[in-house]
Length: 291
Image (tube, rainbow, N blue to C red; front, side, top):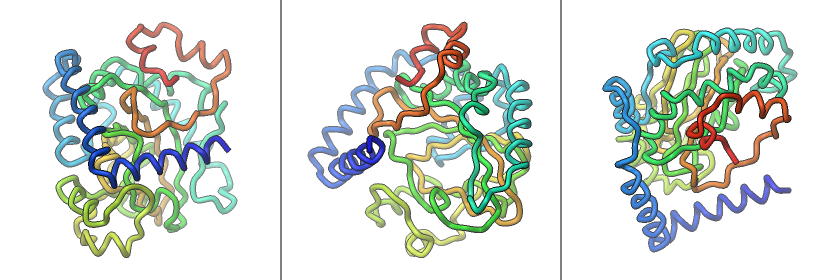
């Protein structure tokens, strides 16, 4: 009941913001004021990190690799993800198009969840979002190669916030037919959103083709450990239907601390999980944990 009420409330909120110009201006002006106020307090980042942020700002996506990001704990992360991939690969999908680990399996090693709390990543994301951020953890998936177009395999934009930052990591090679992230770059996506009068929900291929030719649909493919940095709130995108092989990936997500959308409550941590996540974190890192 609570999740249904949240969905209805969030959709109504977005409809009001999108359809009523005075409300839209009020929300946008308040957001821009917060960004201006926080700008002098943004953490210092390297030129290479700034270049990635600029690419995401310009196109909506930047493709790099885990190794190139150089985040502490990456080698441990790879081992954990390989183990989870092997576990998911051994399961019968039983007709499902997507599989994910059980909560206790995902949280067996807190290093997976804590990777997104590394200070280098928090500094990167804060510079992109322009505000203090909240981190929502890691989501591991196996997208089954059944060719179905359903759920997030349909075109959409995320509606959590003005800016949303995600890092998708391919745990196995991802080919054009292997479930790659497919997106429309921002310079094309922005006018398409206006033409579609898009607020939320899914857009069928037949409708997308009317506003954006398929030749302009881009796929973020790459070998194992490719890292796809994206703002799914500012581009039309989807998980393209996997056809020739299953896709294995992990997604890390951040928003500002005052997102537009009321975020759904994740499965609560046990006392042990909570203690392992929090152990040794700085006050700055602790402030990024979801409420």
